[in-house]
Every structure is written in C-alpha cells, then in structure tokens.
Amino acid sequence: MAEVVIELEGVRKVYNSGPTRVEALRGVDLRVRRGEFLMIVGPSGSGKSTLLHIMGALDTPTSGRVKVAGREISNLSDRELARIRNRYVGFVFQEFNLIETLTVLENVMFPMALADGEDEERAKRLLLKVGLSEEHFDKFPNQLSGGERQRVAIARALANDPEVILADEPTGQLDTKNSHRIMEVFKSLNEDGRTIVMVTHDLSLTRWADRVVVLRDGKIVEEGSPDEVTL
Ligand SMILES: Nc1ncnc2c1ncn2[C@@H]1O[C@H](COP(=O)(O)OP(=O)(O)OP(=O)(O)O)[C@@H](O)[C@H]1O
Ligand SMILES: [Mg+2]
Image 1 (spheres, rainbow, N blue to C red):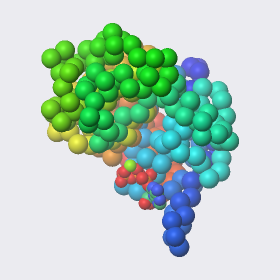
Image 2: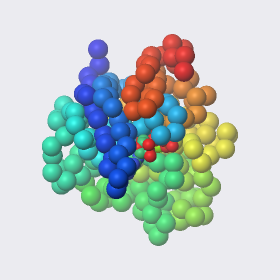
Image 3: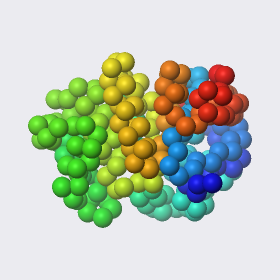
Image 4: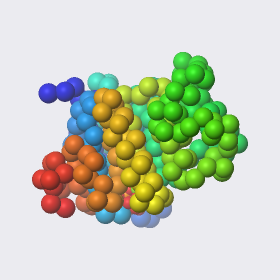
C-alpha cells in the first residue's frame, strides 16, 4: 500500500458569517495515497472547494485532524502553514489566478523565489512539459487563450516540485477540446508519479481518475473506482 500523503480525520468546517451558520463539511475522513489521481465530485455547495482548501493548508478545519506529509497541520502557525503550502502542495484554480503584470516565465518563477530561489531553466522545462511552447514565454497572461493560461498555472503549481497537485475545477472555464488537453496534462503528470487531487462537477471527467470520492452536503457519500461509483 502506497504511502499516505494527505490524511483527514473527522474534518468539520463551519462558516459563521453574521447570523447564518453553514456546515460546509460534516465529518470527512479521507486519505490520499502517493501517486494516485483522486477526483472529488459533487453538486454545487457540497463542500468540494472547502475540502480542497483544507487539504492544501489554505484553510483550517473547525475541528478534526489534517496531516500533510505525515505532519499534523491543524494547529500550526500561519507562517508554518505558508511553508507547507509552498513546499508540499501546488494549487490550480478555475480562474487560473495568474499575475497579470508578470510574463508567463515570471509567473512560473514567482513561487520559486519564496522557496529555493528562481531557476529560469527549470521554469522553462516545466512550461515545455505542460505543452506550452517557447514563443509564449515572454507574453503576458492576457495575450493567451484559456487553455494556454491553464498550462501556465499548472507549470506554476509545479514550480517547487510539490508532493501533491490540488486542482479546483481546472477545466471549468475551458471548452471541451481544451478541457481534454488539460486532462491529458494532468494524466501525464500523474504517470510521472505526481499525486493529483482534482475537484470537478463534470462527471464525464471521472474516467481520468484512479479513484472517485462523491461529496454531498459536506459528507462523503460514495467512494470507489470510476466504474464502481454510481453517482
Ligand atoms: N467563506 C465562506 N463563508 C461562508 N460560507 C461559505 C464560505 N465558503 C463556502 N461557504 C459555504 O459552504 C458551502 C460549501 O461551499 P464550497 O465552496 O466548498 O462548495 P463547492 O462544492 O465547492 O461548490 P461549487 O461546485 O459551487 O464550487 C456552501 O454552502 C457555501 O455557501
Ligand atoms: Mg467550489
């Protein structure tokens, strides 16, 4: 059995905004194994993004335990959490979240500056690896198509050689053809041994995963291989 890289136990998340109280996660137990391609699916509002953010130390649970790379992170300081985020996880978002004033190459080097230092050659290799050709390296994000932007975002997520890539609806703003191409990039990274956790509400994408977890109302209601899960 492969090593567990992220482990959640009894994770609950309650949002208190004014008088309303939302129980976004209601007791989630989940283990992500090294090298797997895990997909989290479920209807809008079921808690998928909340879960992914907690897995990547972008947010903390109201109660329960979270371990990343064998280390309990539920009670770390903000500074230590930032370090975990930098080293162990790479995030990819639906809206790409690139820095518009930096070039493609600078966007990929940006997280490196916060860790081991900028490495231009490595940044170029990562961009080529995700299928972005050299002619785009000095362009700004607004000069790229959606599919190209998402390739930059994936290269940036890989900048510090993270243990796990966490992707929240990474194909949500792409047409079918570009979605397929981005899924091929994730699949190829996974085949290189990279662990991938991807959130989607597009059920046609589950076939790309090794394992699918179905979330409903803040709870895991089903789990299995893409064929096993009935949805
Ligand atoms: N910052 C917040 N403050 C208050 N409530 C929130 C906050 N973030 C999320 N929620 C609520 O928590 C629940 C789960 O939200 P979450 O964003 O995790 O769902 P999701 O499954 O990612 O949905 P979608 O598919 O629409 O992205 C929802 O009811 C949402 O309104
Ligand atoms: Mg979401």
